[in-house]
Structure formats: C-alpha cells, structure tokens
Image (cartoon, rainbow, N blue to C red; front, side, top):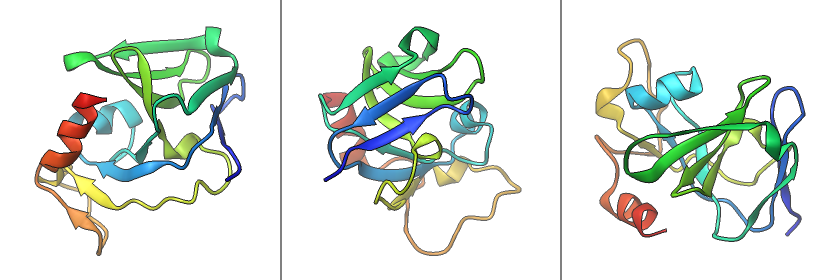
Length: 141
C-alpha cells in the first residue's frame, strides 16, 4: 500500500498515514456541524503509530473537548486536519486527504441530531447515536 497524504487548505501543514484508513463515517451531531462548518463530518480512523506530520506541525492549533477527544487544525487557514484522543492522532478528516484514500463512508452516526435542513443520503448504515462497538473501540484506543 502506498502511504496516504493530506494537507490543509493553505498547504503549510502536511501529514502521511502509512496504513489503510479504517471505519469511515459521517457524524451528524451539532458539535461536528460546528467543528467542520458543514452538515456533518467525514472522518476515518488511523491505526496507532501510522500517522506522522510531514511539515508545519508548529502551525497546529488544538481544541480538546470532553473525555480527552479533540481536533487539530491549521492556525493559518483553519482547516480541521485530524481528531485526537488523549493527545494522539486518532483519525483524519477525509476532506483534507490528498487523492483517493480508498475508503467509503460506511456509517452515518448521530443522525437523530442532524440539522433539520439536511437530507441524509440513501444507503449506508445509520445510527440514532453511535454504534456501541465503535464508541467503545475508540475509548480503548
């Protein structure tokens, strides 16, 4: 497998992922709508130790929310690049991946709190909240 690369909008921050992305999902909760400035997030997990910053790490700003989960974004252009858990990169936002990451959105989570104006796509698994197996796997990461 070739590595997966990604970058922010201005190009100052770049990264590389050395294993396939996992658990592609779109979260429709109000927090993700605000964090991603969109109707939902597009996100995939990375295997532990498979993520590395290539350039611009000093330009990162972070926001840590509940239970140690957070987001890192470019302090210049504002692109949300990745999610973190207890300071380690947990996954990447699919909008900042360069090229084809060879993953699909396999689930839509927190659809009960989606925006009233959003129409969900057909197909794919939908969860009112999050599937218990995914949430417990992330907390064990």
